[in-house]
Length: 147
Image (cartoon, rainbow, N blue to C red):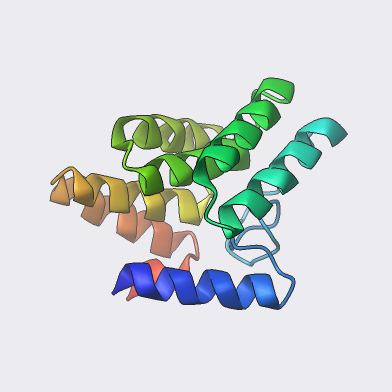
């Protein structure tokens, strides 16, 4: 059910011209309580391309472009989170959790990063950690986690 809901949200945000994400540097939502650190123009270009690739369900391209954004700007929390989300969607849960941990360490206010990490933990059968991450995602304003 969550996968269907996420797909509907992504399609509706892409159609409306918004990002597939809920955060300012991911697309302008109200869930980021702290502004992200400025990134280089090149890193932002790569990140924008990664978001487009994710919106087209091109996860290998998402991972490639998010990796380039991270290479340009190693503290780009949103790029780590997006790459982690793409890893999760390809079934590479270990790399997903690594990237999501890094994203959260860089910016602990990324509600969607907690949400995606909760999903990854759920896949791994780590229900206690998943529940804690869903609670954090909700506390950071990521509304899908509050259901």
